[in-house]
Each structure stands twice: as structure tokens, then as C-alpha cells.
Image (cartoon, rainbow, N blue to C red; front, side, top):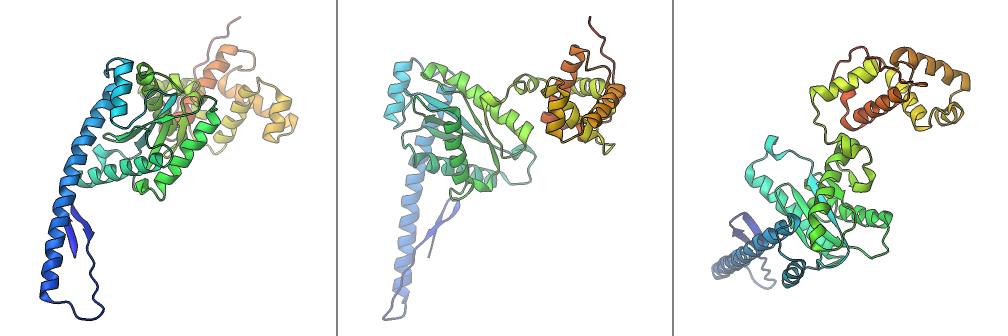
Length: 337
């Protein structure tokens, strides 16, 4: 017998009679039992919804710096069964789907997001039942306490394990998601900055690595700055001016030349080391350098040009612009001294 609630089937009641067939009275009792169970579940869900809304408002206030004094916020969190006074990282798990452009119904999106939040709550709760976990519109935010001596590698290993549980047995895998992790902080007053770091990490990580990325804020490097520039015509123009035809994949050779240029810049133009990394003969690499300089300008002697090229390559790596625009001939950067 199905237990039907406001959002559909909430469960089933199963009755088994080994020694006789089921009678009409039995069916009537099952129907009454299903009704009572549905009412009990509805009451419990209503209470949980109010508590969840209350918790969500408090956590949102804490993440935006509006939770009051540190002492009051820690005490308030403790009354909710949460711990805020320890060293922790902010973890943001954000869905990769764009709900504003999806064909899913609003009801389906809400159900998926609730499942996503419950999966994170269960996964984190298995490690730390007092860790705050809350689902918002397209993200789930976790404040995860970490030991004082925990390294970034250990923290990321823990987050990776949690994400694996959510994607698998946790039941949240129906919503593909990326994850961002902040630097460790202590004190409620530092939560807004840590939350901003986690948001930046999840956004840039997705741009750089694609959907499903798990990224720590310290991994971003120069991408922290590049991500602040909108993917605009001006940004595309910068890539065009720097790399010209090398910015596209119209020529099958371009990807290999970009790799060569990247390795040369990363090795500070050490031709012998770059040859070993690329598995090229020394003279072969010299030939490719000459070809690149004919295309891009004298980057081996112009440090400003090298910087421009390095930034353009980073933009391509993060934005994937090589697939999406037509290039113009590169503008030559004037040589300085």
C-alpha cells in the first residue's frame, strides 16, 4: 500500500499473511495505516522545513558577515547542533547545470536540489555530525572542521572522498557538480572571505578543468585574476592580438605549436630542458622556435612579449577560446630595451 504525501509517493506499507488470504478489512486497515503514516510524515516534513529555513538563514548571515559577534554566532550555532569555533574550510558544491536554461520543471529541479543537499548532509555527517551543511539555490555549502596540522593535500583528499560518496551511494549524483574549497580560517568574522574564496575556486575550477572539478583556492594562481575579466570581445581581442592564427585550431599543427610555446615559457627558454620534456631533438626544437618567432614576434628576446603570450595561453587554457573565434594576425608588441 503506497504512502502518498504532498510530493508524491513517500513510501509503502507491506502486509504479508501466510496462513490466509487478505480480506477487505485487511485492506481497509492498510489504507488507514497509510493515511496515518502520510499525516505523520507531513507533520515531520513541515517541522523540518521550518528548522531548515531557520538554519539556512543563520548560515547565510554567517557567510555574509551578518551573524553578530563571534561569541553570539558560535553560541547560536551550538544551539543548532553546529560547531563554528574551530579551524575550518568552506566547501561549496555547485551544480554544473544551468537551471535557468534547463528543460526540467521547477518541481523536478527542487526535488533534485533537495536530494543533492541531503546527499552532502549524509556524507559530511558520517565524518562530523556537527559540521554545518546547508543547501541553497544551486549550491550546497559545508563548513568542515579540520585539524590544526592538516595539509592542503589531506584536506583535498577528504573533500574528494566526500564528493565521491555524494556522486555514488549518497544519491546526489543525479546533479553533476563542481566543488571549490577555501583556505583554512578560524573565527566567524573570517567566514565571508573564505566563502568568497570557495565560490571563486568552484567557478574558476570549472572553467579550467571542466564540469566535476574539485579545486582549492590556492591552486588558482594567475587564474584568480583572469577569471575577473569577463569573456568579452576585448578578452578575445587580446588573445587574437597576442597569438593570431595560433589561437585557433583551424590548422592541425597549432595545438602542437601552442604546447611547444607553453613549455618554452615554463622552462624560461631553456632549450635543452624543453627538448627533454617534449621529446624533441635539439635542432627540431630550434626549428620550431624560429617558426614561432615568425608567427608571433621575437619572444625569445622580448620579455614583455613573453608575458603577453603567457597570459594569452592561460586565457585559452581556462576559457577554451580556441574553439570559438576567428583569429586576426597578431599585433607585434614593441620591444623594450
